[in-house]
Each structure stands twice: as structure tokens, then as C-alpha cells.
Image (cartoon, rainbow, N blue to C red; front, side, top):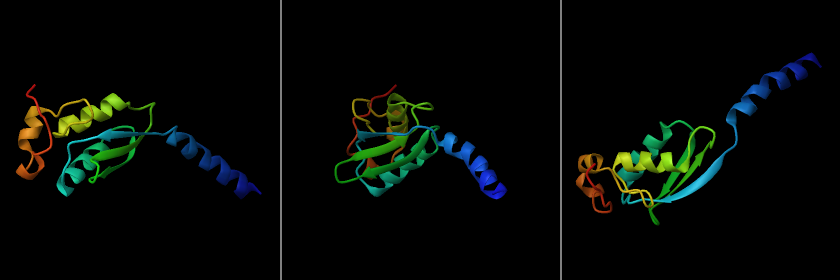
Length: 112
């Protein structure tokens, strides 16, 4: 009985750390597998993002995030800072210029 109570007590903090999750879908200018890897990698390094998956067919990324740690605007900024459009947020010009040539066909970057 003591082991059961102890296990339940130890599991409680981990369950509350996960927090509430929301999912947002964002249209991007990504066009190839390198774009997908670059965007997903940068989102994975962002605070509050638990998972992202870019569908290259429709260029839409689904992002699962904790709204207590980040918001949709920050997620879109992260994508734009990598060099890609994110819905109405235009890709950062400097980051866009650093992309491989095969990745530059879809974005409408502007210099900042």
C-alpha cells in the first residue's frame, strides 16, 4: 500500500508540469524536406512547444504548445525568424537570404 501511495505522490508533479496544451495550424512558405526540418527543429527549441509537424502537401504546420509559456504570435515570429512566411507574418529578410536556394521559392521575405 505504501508503494502505491508513494508512486501516486511522485507522479503528481509530473502530471501538473505538462500543463494545458493547445494546437494551432499555421500556413507556411515551406516547400521541401529541408524547410520542414529547419522549421520543426527551431520550434522544438522554443519554450512552450511540445510538438510540431509540417505537412508539405498543404504547407501547413500543426504546433502543439502550452499557452502559459508561449502564444500563437510568438510561434509565428519563430517561423518568420527562420526565414519562412507564417500566415500573415512575413519571413525575416536576413534569415530568408541565408536559406538554401531550393527553399527560397515560396517566401515573400522583407528586409528588417
